[in-house]
Length: 65
Image (cartoon, rainbow, N blue to C red; front, side):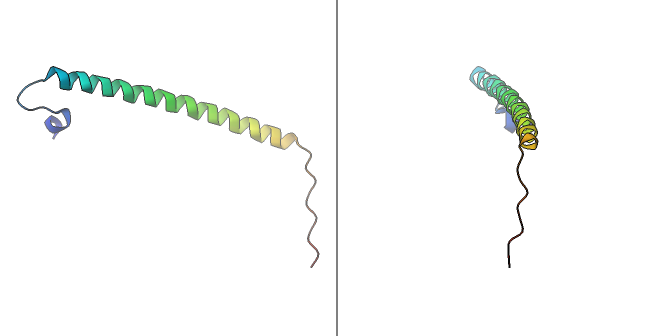
């Protein structure tokens, strides 16, 4: 199974190894970007909650029935 995942067929092909390294680097780059975006999203969410709590929003009056 591992051989199939690595593209191993009778020997190490330099092109396959190069492509595998490129894809691994791409995965690392995307994981880093995801972590950065999650942190930014958390920061923006916290700022929005803080800003929302500072607004003086009058309570809605009950509807007449």
